Amino acid sequence: MRPVYLDNNATTRVDPDVVQAMLPFFTDHFGNPSSIHAFGASVGAAVKTARRQLQALIGAEFDHEVVFTSGGTESDNAAILSALEVMPDRTEIVTSAVEHPAVLSLCADLEKRRGITVHRIPVDRHGRLDLEAYRAALSSRVAIVSIMWANNETGTIFPVAELAELAKEAGALFHTDAVQAVGKLPIDLRSTAIDMLSLSGHKLHAPKGIGALYVKRGVRFRSQIKGGHQERARRAGTENTPGIVGLGKAAELAMKFMDDENTRVKTLRDRLEKGLLQAIPNAFVTGDPRERLPNTANIAFEYIEGEGMLLLLNREGIACSSGSACTSGSLEPSHVLRAMDIPYTAAHGAIRFSFSRDNCEDDVDRVLEVMPGIVEKLRELSPFWAGVGEAPKTFNPVYA
Image (cartoon, rainbow, N blue to C red; front, side, top):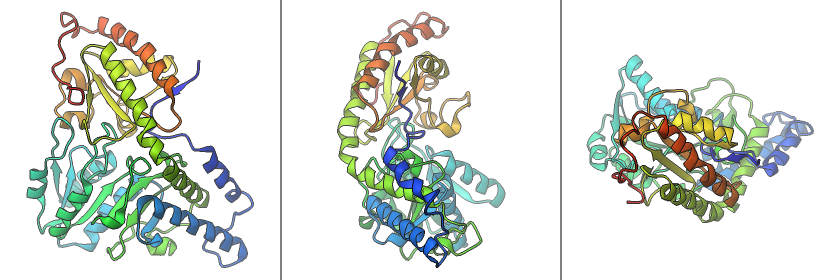
């Protein structure tokens, strides 16, 4: 039985071409890129090439606007902490109620330890930001706005270009966690007012432990890791050359496969959603029906526990998730679904299927084959399902 991997928002398989690009930098090209001799110079040139490859993917105006980091969490933290340092007279942050823990946990810590005021903007049942509440939160006291480009659980896309313009009018910096968007959506930062953007390699077929922070030219920035002068003194520490080279190659491949991501992969996603909704009563898709990542399907199955579904799917060789991998293990419903006011009877039974270019029609067929039986089995064991039966669907934002 061929395994079916549908948890690509948690991590992706490293592309074989990325692996091949990285291998020489573990052996033949092992020099320190900061060294001036030949061993270092060749490696430094490879780092520069990777920087330009990433620049092209995100539409940055200059290659030096790309700062290599260990991943999305470091990039998010660096952006927010730097903004508070360069604007010490501003002591407020604006973010959303559905951000990744890399942002929300930091904001909660800053509230507790430093007395920073955090405005968490609510969302509607589709996961869309309350724009009136956002405008009301902006003021001369806000140092930075941090709003994700696309949600990691539902795939809902935020209007970050518009949000950045509004932040600029208030004199605040604007940062976006674009970890789930980079490589899936066309991005041209030159045409936006976005000041900083975070991305992570392992979400776009590069290895784990490598990412980047875009810092727009002219934006004041304070390094959070002190030491040497690497990355133009914005991120100290000897560069992770194999990871950087791998990220550069992955960025090049992402541009090549962008159309596939938004056509074939989206078709697979849509076919899975419609097939499951036709076969399983009392289920609905969460997220914005129009502005949603092409690879992400978050489906809530009422009167059932998501963990039970994941375990039974795993026995069938199918991998998916009940939300962010960074919050797995929690018995509470996802903070994203709670913020969207998803009914409690459904929030516990939400499953995220996230595709990549590695997936195919057979993967969809396999899920459609086994999922109805799994749901039926678990509902038979659920005291909440007794007496409900195949009640009419009353909440289906995407396929209303």
